[in-house]
Length: 102
Image (cartoon, rainbow, N blue to C red):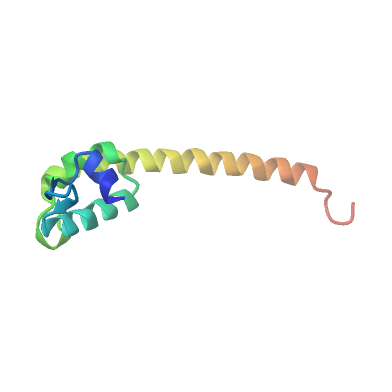
Protein backbone atom coordinates (compact mmCIF):
# COMPACT_ATOMS: atom_id res chain seq x y z
CA UNK A 1 0.00 0.00 0.00
CA UNK A 2 2.77 2.46 0.91
CA UNK A 3 4.56 1.66 -2.33
CA UNK A 4 1.31 2.40 -4.20
CA UNK A 5 1.09 5.80 -2.51
CA UNK A 6 4.70 6.41 -3.47
CA UNK A 7 3.98 5.42 -7.09
CA UNK A 8 1.11 7.92 -7.12
CA UNK A 9 3.50 10.60 -5.88
CA UNK A 10 1.62 11.07 -2.60
CA UNK A 11 4.61 10.27 -0.40
CA UNK A 12 8.32 10.28 -1.10
CA UNK A 13 11.03 7.83 -0.20
CA UNK A 14 14.75 7.78 -0.59
CA UNK A 15 16.80 4.63 -1.09
CA UNK A 16 19.40 3.17 1.19
CA UNK A 17 22.69 1.89 -0.18
CA UNK A 18 21.08 -1.56 -0.32
CA UNK A 19 18.08 -0.27 -2.25
CA UNK A 20 15.56 -0.30 0.59
CA UNK A 21 13.00 2.47 0.66
CA UNK A 22 13.50 4.97 3.46
CA UNK A 23 10.55 7.11 4.48
CA UNK A 24 10.68 10.24 6.58
CA UNK A 25 8.91 10.04 9.95
CA UNK A 26 6.29 12.44 8.56
CA UNK A 27 5.29 9.77 6.01
CA UNK A 28 3.39 7.92 8.75
CA UNK A 29 1.17 10.95 9.28
CA UNK A 30 0.80 11.46 5.53
CA UNK A 31 -0.34 7.86 5.06
CA UNK A 32 -2.89 8.36 7.83
CA UNK A 33 -4.23 11.47 6.06
CA UNK A 34 -4.34 9.60 2.74
CA UNK A 35 -6.33 6.76 4.30
CA UNK A 36 -8.83 9.17 5.88
CA UNK A 37 -9.36 10.95 2.56
CA UNK A 38 -9.74 7.68 0.66
CA UNK A 39 -12.22 6.37 3.25
CA UNK A 40 -14.26 9.52 2.65
CA UNK A 41 -14.73 8.32 -0.92
CA UNK A 42 -12.26 10.67 -2.55
CA UNK A 43 -10.41 9.28 -5.55
CA UNK A 44 -6.63 8.99 -5.34
CA UNK A 45 -6.24 11.42 -8.26
CA UNK A 46 -7.45 14.39 -6.14
CA UNK A 47 -5.37 13.59 -3.08
CA UNK A 48 -2.38 15.65 -4.25
CA UNK A 49 -4.48 18.78 -4.09
CA UNK A 50 -6.11 17.90 -0.78
CA UNK A 51 -2.90 16.90 0.96
CA UNK A 52 -1.63 20.44 0.46
CA UNK A 53 -4.64 21.59 2.51
CA UNK A 54 -4.02 19.36 5.55
CA UNK A 55 -2.97 21.19 8.67
CA UNK A 56 -2.07 19.95 12.10
CA UNK A 57 -4.55 17.81 14.01
CA UNK A 58 -6.24 16.56 10.83
CA UNK A 59 -7.84 19.91 10.12
CA UNK A 60 -8.19 21.09 6.56
CA UNK A 61 -7.53 24.59 5.33
CA UNK A 62 -10.35 26.35 3.48
CA UNK A 63 -8.59 25.50 0.19
CA UNK A 64 -10.12 22.01 0.50
CA UNK A 65 -13.73 23.16 0.71
CA UNK A 66 -14.57 23.58 -3.02
CA UNK A 67 -13.20 20.16 -3.90
CA UNK A 68 -14.94 18.50 -0.96
CA UNK A 69 -18.22 20.22 -1.82
CA UNK A 70 -17.96 18.94 -5.40
CA UNK A 71 -17.42 15.39 -4.19
CA UNK A 72 -20.24 15.66 -1.65
CA UNK A 73 -22.56 16.84 -4.42
CA UNK A 74 -21.52 13.89 -6.59
CA UNK A 75 -22.22 11.49 -3.72
CA UNK A 76 -25.64 13.08 -3.18
CA UNK A 77 -26.44 12.61 -6.88
CA UNK A 78 -25.43 8.94 -6.72
CA UNK A 79 -27.53 8.46 -3.57
CA UNK A 80 -30.54 10.02 -5.31
CA UNK A 81 -30.06 7.77 -8.34
CA UNK A 82 -29.73 4.68 -6.15
CA UNK A 83 -32.82 5.68 -4.15
CA UNK A 84 -34.79 5.99 -7.39
CA UNK A 85 -33.51 2.63 -8.62
CA UNK A 86 -34.43 1.06 -5.30
CA UNK A 87 -37.95 2.45 -5.50
CA UNK A 88 -38.33 1.05 -9.02
CA UNK A 89 -37.13 -2.37 -7.91
CA UNK A 90 -39.43 -2.33 -4.90
CA UNK A 91 -42.34 -1.43 -7.18
CA UNK A 92 -41.54 -4.37 -9.44
CA UNK A 93 -41.37 -6.70 -6.45
CA UNK A 94 -44.64 -5.35 -5.07
CA UNK A 95 -46.40 -5.77 -8.41
CA UNK A 96 -45.20 -9.37 -8.70
CA UNK A 97 -46.14 -10.33 -5.16
CA UNK A 98 -49.74 -11.45 -4.67
CA UNK A 99 -51.70 -9.40 -2.19
CA UNK A 100 -52.55 -11.21 1.05
CA UNK A 101 -55.80 -13.12 0.68
CA UNK A 102 -55.72 -12.94 -3.10
